[in-house]
Image 1 (cartoon, one colour):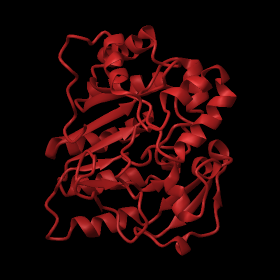
Image 2 (tube, helix red, strand yellow):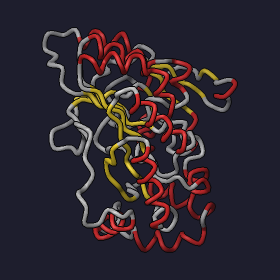
Image 3 (cartoon, helix red, strand yellow):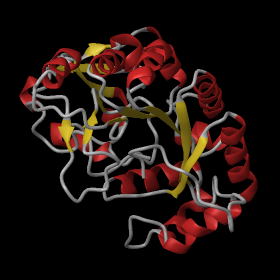
Length: 315
């Protein structure tokens, strides 16, 4: 789950004409293309009145190889003349100067070390990070300037940077959240074909917790009729608890314009028996009815109990 008004969702952080000839991915990244760009700035100030978790965000990539059918950020690719379907999944914008630019911005005397959120618009630990290591460089820069930060990811690759996270944790506020909508293998493979297995995310959460890093998970998005069965929800909640993480919330699928059409097209092919139900449920709306959200907590066995805590800066 991401936030629709955060990240580099609007034009201006780099010029479209700066996009260069794609660099083809190889090996595990075969089928991906990386579009190198020189960013004008890396710290993005979130507009007042937004639903963002913090006032500042960083997204060193644009597009995401996780290829989640429901990803709200898909329309941001259209600002570049790319499509929100395959282009978003496979043509990844890489801000190759991200670390150098960030160091300069953090060195500005006007910087007040406000909390920074990563993973608001695209996953900072998607496959491109194994190649470019920009997220690691960003963490190092934030740590050097004792700037608090939070991460939201679907990838166990975050444990690669456990050394940096430990160092940061000694001097500032650090938290890592995972997005785990389901542990159902069939639903995961169909809806998030490029993402790491959610059970590996649970294992990564346990490793971070053991290292003293505050961790948690969003059970989101929950897909009506596909991952909202009480057994499915309780399985995820139990796994989070067993890993020592905090339940940060349970959220139903959100379908903004553009994403709605993409998702429904995917749904018609993957789960045709659910198609008509979604048309009714999301008729004229981007969100599921409010009462459905309450039902999800009850189905997860949380009805009547204190609601989950939140990582600082997270909703």
